[in-house]
Length: 280
Image 1 (cartoon, one colour):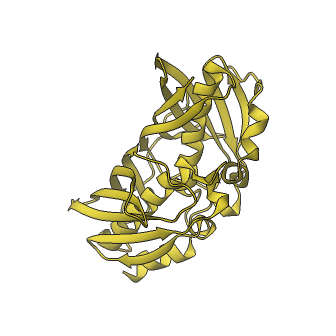
Image 2: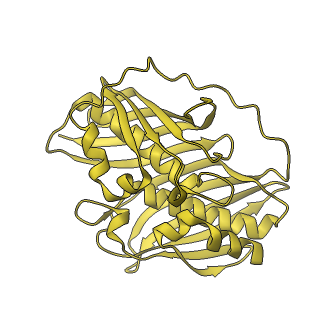
């Protein structure tokens, strides 16, 4: 238990978000995220990347408590989150429950709710402990042509406090494609490298920007209904780049495939799909 508590206390990214551990055991946990404008979109709406971060932080805390100090490094092999409603100008809580422990895998369910018990997000997560095994031989990202064209919305991304504080910038937003970068910086860090939560925030944002790159700017309502992702290996201390392409559109719904890789070596650390909704 001390190992898991220390991981939470020593993670700069956890401290940056302001997450407070209310309870933690080998079976469950409750984490509180007090309201903070720096974690929000305009209007005080909790950013989807923050909710995703809260989910993986809770899942890893219980997994570390369950698997023990020798289990590392850990990574989220399976991640599915559905966003049920917006949290606006209010604190939220993540209630984490261990469903099953295997030899090196933990399967968990995480529910995010407001203090009024309004459901915000529901997630299913599988966390793997590598127990010191050699790092996987990761594949190289498909990437893109390298064209630089952030389009009319690219410069606006950094105006969002949460995204701006991550250092995320758009290099490409054109024709249903996006490419965003996130430099290595201390407030995105875990004790072992880039925090998975910060990496998933880049993942989420890149998928959303691919959808916006297809529609162009406008006075539309938009949100992320769901994210499906697999972390192939823990992101190390390095700059990251994420590529996304709209692979399917059905009216207001966009399926945006995303690869997140090292900016230099192009090794893929996270892959999956962001389902984004833009109501015109």
